[in-house]
Length: 417
Image 1 (cartoon, rainbow, N blue to C red):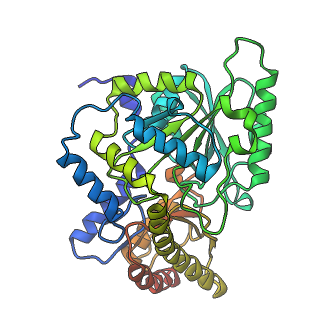
Image 2 (image 1 turned 90 degrees about the vertical axis):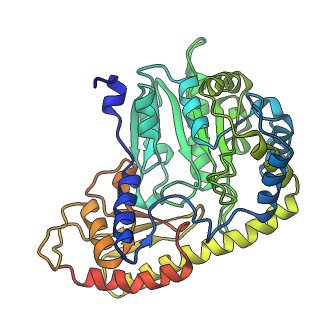
């Protein structure tokens, strides 16, 4: 059957491909620490009990019809208060848009701003920007971020590509690395964007920033920063992506919010309306009630973040110990999100069965089978397949799973020649 050019060229998720391999092995009885998917096992990381109670109550109250296209007013008011309280950002409910998680907001940002052939700048590694470029016929400009910058893009890398660009896609804390912008790094990028927009003639489309801060409430001893707080003059040019999916382990509840200039948000509202990508009304009602009580949110976050950080630190310390023992590995200290950046530099080595590990995917599948440890290579996030860096996501594993995994990784690596 013939399909569109877009559909015929679309690329499936490498993470799902790896996850399918893991699930097949687990179905055969293999013990595997699944550190692949950026999701949570609800048996390990359940949503807040108070939120679950409010969701059930909303359904019992028959909150099951269409919500407003931009989200129920009470939730947008609560989000407005949350932004002011936690980030000192002033956005009215009119400038806030609710959707079924953050993905429709990212896609509608692209659709609202990008014409075919427009330039979109984004770092590698990063999550899915290449796919959204494909879906909107944009020209993706990939910035290869570096280890010495914690794999965050910096101004000197971005500057040569700004002329004629329409969108700069940024994320902090970053998926897949779990690293964050420093204030200096982000301020330098903000100044570049302000300078670029000032130089553009009247009538030319400005350069926008899409700032994905879906992990902003999951940071470990570091302060989350954003472009508008650093440079208020950018307010007309920044579209924020945020929501509950990661901060309260509620990926399946599907409530996200975007906020930014009304002229853009109103167009995104129309796009989301045609897509029907609304968050369910009952969940919106429940989230509004839950987040209205900031004390209970903070109490949950304190417990939740501690649990996440223990798992991240266990892997980080385990890899640092392996490094001290002479193994060709490394790790970047966790800063935020549910991810850890790992270096496993064994491309070109041979397995006990005589198989050559030709690229990062081979290394990963060797570890799945020999160590029961499933990671995601950075090649799934836009980097070359000969890059020896990987993402570990801790949302689907217990601390005990991770502790049991580390000796298996050591044994598997020690067998490579």
